[in-house]
Length: 600
Image 1 (cartoon, rainbow, N blue to C red):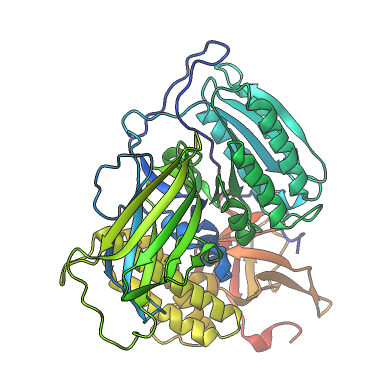
Image 2: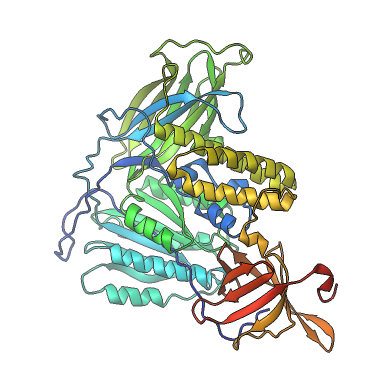
């Protein structure tokens, strides 16, 4: 299969990365002026996974990812949620909250849904970030060759464009060996071209010893931090496929926790189709950690234009929240923190920890589902007088800069009968129904019960489509695609238009091929459900099968992952046209009946 393209241009899909900020500093050692970046909206959100771009990318490519590849906080990452009354916060970190009646998908016993938001006394008009001491740790192993490493190089170029005089950059490379590729370099007005040239020269080779790379990176961070008047942060670029040295996540988490205690946080940037979302989520969901996945140029724009000055702005650490429900209720679920972090008491209280919260231009939050108290599940809901809390949240935390302990308590009451919930709380309720539906639907699919998966996504699609909130447009596309895909796979096609990424599966015969494509009229192309592209040629009347190559697909393009060739495609009834966008080279194919396929 590797030989059937003679010469076609590759259309790269680019991704990017972040850098770091924090609070205010003097001029740099060279006397250069340090510009300030004024933040226009000082909101707060928790760390961990900050998007579900990996899951969305898998769905766009016609794949159904595993349920552990997305998290509630990741799903919320694309939304600016302001929950509860926005009373002035008189300390570094406060909770806000409001409640509504629950109607969550897959959870019929839940009666109340509480949203807990975050606020701060940080003045949005005067806050500015300090100079940044950034240590970029780059996976340059063989699995990063091609598109993934190209995304990293583009990410680093974007970062250099955002760095200012007074900031400092170190680059560590790791594969089978780890080393400082670029020594700590203060950014000046004149040395950016030299830095960019070094970035462009990064090449892939070797296996993946992530642990060794992180050790070299942290050594550089700890060595340079004492003399640097600003914030030091590590940024890991990888497709998360460690295969040498210690590959268990706990070894990475141990390093991240130790570094965070010394005020060096970790931002993980996932790139490439092999990115292990579940592992990266575990690595990043620790003190001082957050995670972003970059799949295309739009992600680059979103991160660098909107989130760059927030993603490393740690506000508080070791946040511990204790939830005390009204005696008539019990806490049945918490969304926004890992389930293993929850602790239950005999008194019905639930406690959990959030390792880190960050400044953000988008409001974040946690959600709590509440059911009837044990033994009272079949009784009428208790009448809670107006103003009586349905839930009380007590919080403790430490200041990320000075490790000073503080506390805060919030009481949340149910709204008056007939009152409408706030728009952002209602949106959060719908998003958590989406999360629950995706979890159930993907779990059923990977257990082999495609019919059950279809029924779940059909119901979820109805919930999303019925919601008129314009902000749910990305979710309509995501759930609509999963609904159509499972409908086709389960044979429930009545009234469902299959996505194009599935409609082109099958066997095709070449009817015309331009010069530059090593295919002839009569050759056959099979696009399988296992995402393999297979060419069969007729030689002396006998079929000869080329080596298969894996492909990825969305509604507009097909990417051959090994040869890194991208085709745009058009589907018209039984005709498939593949065209390289850069050269215009085209091959036209006609759908074949199964019994006519060579070799069958």
